Length: 311
Length: 299
Image (cartoon, rainbow over all chains, first blue to last red; front, side, top):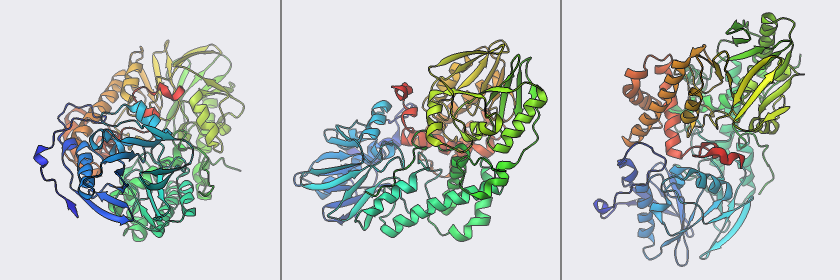
């Protein structure tokens, strides 16, 4: 299904600018995004504009929205999609997956009166950032695991430790056997240079989710996966760690992107070339992993010893 | 011989870690010397009876080569102090091979990361510093260590030598455009903090990579990152596919080529650097280091 706005021309231009500093108007921020929406399982729906993906859940009286999409226009289109599916059910709760603006930057455009749930580490950054359009949480949880029963919807929020961004949590729906987590497992190779990924502990922390009973994984980008897709993605990260060390041992200079690109095509294309977005990102993935080993990991998040206890 | 491994887990790295390049120190003033392994660069300071070494280089072999270069330049003076510019292993990872008995000075945030990391060969900090400025007077030499706020890595310190009018700042401003993906740079306040250092009276700028530079190149470096930040925002607004290397490279070359195209490495690196910077604006910065008032880190 594709959501086509009935009156896009009447959309009030939104001036929430995130952290952009150049003078407006920023047309791309306000532009309407076509959104597709599909039922996944039970009361859970998923929405995507082709690249970004999230979920919303029908409650007894209203809707729980996860994340906000990446621009004010995207947030309004997301709101429009939910209202098309549940026209008499307002969004009363937003759950933030993590702090990044491209996923949670525009609650002010999605549902400014909704309650907002987030992990405390996520909320701390959001409050310090003061980004235009990103609203702070109204309720935070600390620690690793919190059960919620909101408007007839039962789910758990799980924080495995630093994986990507700050306070990045997964939503687990045990009755539906569905796990939702953003900007971690994504189909294909990793995104660009793994921006704000905490590689030291990433795969160990993500494997904690394998102890839970789920068979549908909804990522924050592209298409829905299953357990095998989830495990394959983590195996890719582990393998990239080995390949990056081999590349350094082979004398490859991480600062020479042309050389890294040639190296990846000559040595690794036969094995990995069919992976989604190999051409776009494989060399960037390699550079990022090489930098990880050369520099030692970045900040506290990039150096914490991982907890490996199953959930 | 056992090699310190940093955080490498593969035995394949042993030759890489052991390799000792030829290094020769170059004198910048009566007491200050600089040395490079061909990519990374640092300084050391000759005291009356000892040496203060800044950083260690990025492998055990390079740390040993650095020690040999120091011994050749100032024979008979032991390294009594090592100052870590920041926490990264490629600059400060191998004090165990450079001077295992030396006092290790660094910012308190650097000390915290190093304790957590527990990398093989990176010695913990024995004298952690707090606050923005710390004057050091040791063995007849004086300098100022400055942490203006998060710029690169964690607890990054620049060193200012007022008498010699020299500024040393590792992996912040470069004397060229070879920033790559700007690993672990904190862009929210980077240029603002670096311009604060430009208020100091220095003529010689020693970066953590590439050649020794000067004040004008330092200012040009600040201007470049600032202009690229504007161009990246404009690319986003103009719907350039910000995740595509070649598209970002071409867009930013067209925008900035006339002003900065003469910088060494401009054509090869601007695509990577632009992708890194545009994601700052897309995502909002990374962690508390990248928020408008990062002093919250110390709260």
